[in-house]
Image (cartoon, rainbow, N blue to C red; front, side):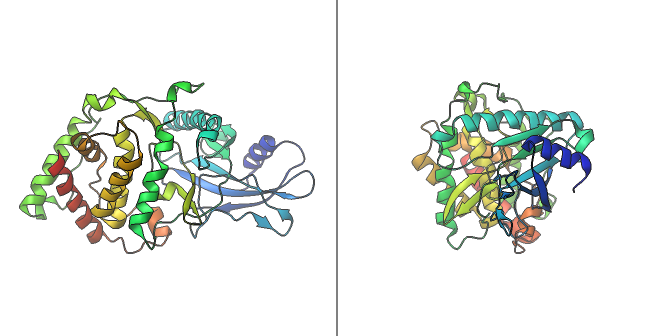
Length: 342
């Protein structure tokens, strides 16, 4: 992916004297292509600019060493034009750049790293989509822990530090969501007609709550949210989270939405018990304004999935156990759990 416009974008961001050594594909999300970019600095050393936003094919972020010397690798993310409408892709990346600058200004309040923005290109015609060059965080994505319960507790403990940031201190406006029902009604699971009576009843309650949207009272304490907080956006080192990636969906809104998005991922990866342990662990260390069970259940309903197909990066990272049958059973159990709390 070393076309002349890409090389020009990278080298103009770095300044004079830099040479691109390698451009290597990485595991990214559904909405972006991600590449590792190794460069040699003007003093002749290979530099590693610690870029983030992607994972190596084995789930590891680059170690950062090369025969030429100390390696700093930048990561280039290009939003996929077939995933976003052109204007919304530009808006999404521009909004993310404002979030990254906000996070960099508040890094002293955080005990994990966040991407640092190095360059931004919103003209989708030049690079095949709006693009960002950002810093790399060393470590590995872990979605197959030996102790899922302790792992979920660590996920929960890392989140409140972001929720406690005062979004009003941002020098650029951050996106803020307001109470409203979804633009389209949620789609019922394809297997619903085959399910038993309790599961059908539970899904109907969950779908009704999702169609109504999160109650307005949940917006009374607007909070800075990651917006896409889930395990494949976490970087781990020596059993602890060292970095949080992918801030494209960050907004200001009800804290329960961040929890709900992570919870449905945990349901699919490990089941309802681990998702509930995550919520309990967050409530033990999180914000005083964490939502009560009923309001959290409404957030869970809004973020619940009705598709039992595995998320592609899970498969790429080795979770071939997540079959359609497994995901269907776990999502059915989650619908029953949510319905009991509505």
